[in-house]
Length: 90
Image (cartoon, rainbow, N blue to C red):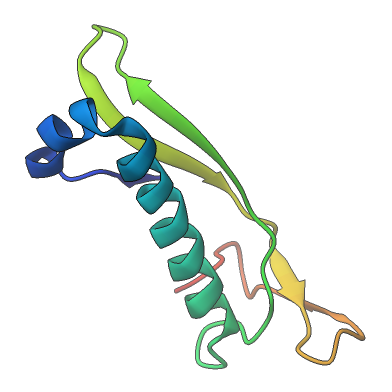
């Protein structure tokens, strides 16, 4: 899960499309960059991100829930690189 910093929430209330677009872009690029790094996984990740904007008590709290498989496509596209143990990244 990735949360928009509290300091940016007032800005996001007035510029939702821009800020939420930046949140999706930043989170996806972060996961793809770390996943591609051979020190972590060395593979191309797949991911699905879901935006939540409000808490149960209706407080504005934008955050993304990300679903990422337990591994990724090898750089040559010819195989699957599984994660070690039960974690995507250590």
